[in-house]
Image (cartoon, rainbow, N blue to C red; front, side):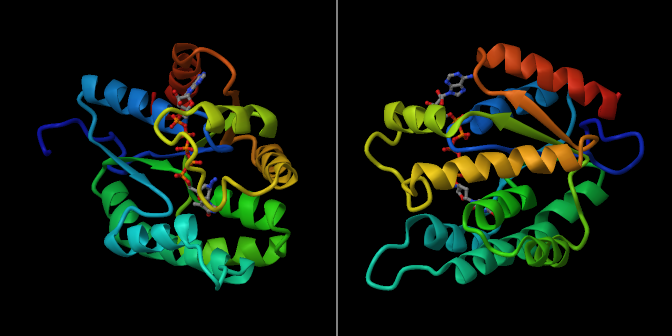
Amino acid sequence: MKSKKQSASGKGVFISFEGPECAGKTTQIRMLQEYFTKKNIDTVVTREPGGTVIGEELRKIVKHHVGETAVVDEAEVLLFAASRAQHVRKVIIPALSSGINVICDRYSDSTMAYQGYGRGLDLSFIAMLNRFATAGCMPDLTFVLDLTAEESSERIINREETLFLEDRIESAELSFHKRVRQGFLEIARQEPERVKIISAVQPKEAIHGQIIGLLKNVIG
Ligand code: Z5A
């Protein structure tokens, strides 16, 4: 681990990927990880909800809980925040402090987009909850892979790995997913320096090329 290159500032770069389901986040994260590996740059790849043992337990509840007692929206937002509070303190901040880059598959913008814009919970409460959960640790750069709700649901239907296996949030109605997308676009409008929108309807290599181009402004 120590033989690999770490950032000149001594602090790692924090990159998050956001967007609707099936936008290609996992695919792009894998390609970016390979890019860093070839350059011998130390990187941790992690995800939300999840990234810690507790976070992965919470992930099972928020993604797949079914049964007579549905997870109410207020409980859902707190479960995501709980996963994040553990994750940021046990994984993200320690890695960044050691000069290791962090790539995170979803982070606090997902809470704003899904639970705020999507579920309709109070946006200022979510902003406060995000500040509490993250301890103020925000990504240096966030890529929102943008896809319409219709394009996203078509990819979910055709996705080989999970054919016919939509999870609890994926199976929400189309209008919910439209609001989520608008949420991501609004976040990008409010924070254009940090949040970059990239069309997810392009060949994978073209998207990767755009990501590397934008990263060079941050990493050098
Ligand atoms: N959630 C929340 O509500 N609040 C929060 O605070 C947080 C999360 C943190 C996590 O699910 C769920 O939790 C998510 C939001 C919510 N809810 N939903 N629904 P997840 O992590 O399991 O799933 P996901 O983040 O939605 O990702 P995904 O469905 O696994 O998709 P993806 O990672 O973005 O895409 P992919 O796996 O790379 O590719 C999907 C398919 O598209 C696959 O068949 C690829 O071959 C194809 N693909 C990829 N790129 C392309 C291009 N460029 N063209 C065409 N096809 C492509």
